[in-house]
Amino acid sequence: MTGEVKKAFNAACKLLAVRDRSVFEVRTALEKKQFGESAVEGAVAELLRRNLLDDEKFAARYAESLVRHKKAGPRYISAALARKGIGAAAAMEATKTASDPRKQDAAVKEWIERKSASKRKNDSLEKRKKRIYDFLLRRGFSPEVVMKNIRNLRE
Image 1 (spheres, rainbow, N blue to C red):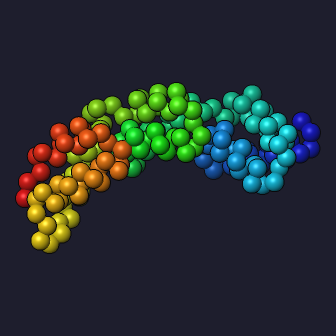
Image 2: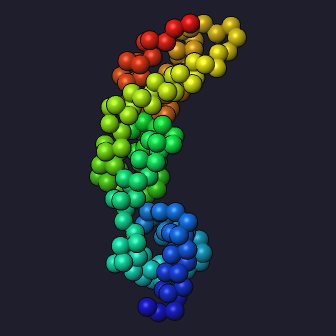
Image 3: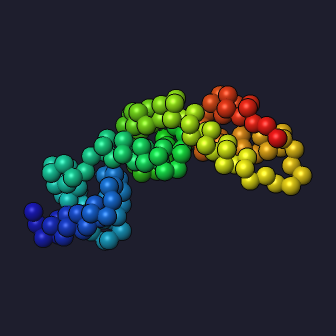
């Protein structure tokens, strides 16, 4: 490795020591640090060769993290992975693996319970259902899954 490639590689290793990152994120971070294009590509190639970067593994771990910590739905996960530079095929596989129907139902029920507990004064049941429905759609759940679970909401 040349001097600049080695510096870029070391900078990328420091980034990866903090948390996993996608190839896109590492490239972007190294470019922000003013490394040349050849140094960035050399460092990324070395990281890939040493199996320190793997977009498929990153996508699977990140999707699982979103499900566990943010209680996110499939569409939210897909959009988040796209923002991280993950390809469509890897994103779809990670999303499918991370969000099985039982996990989705459990997450939706948990959100409904949380959101219905914080009642606003003078809100009708229909208004609360609409607010929760909209929130869950923004969280990436499908309308079918949301409607199936929100029907049981009572006063």
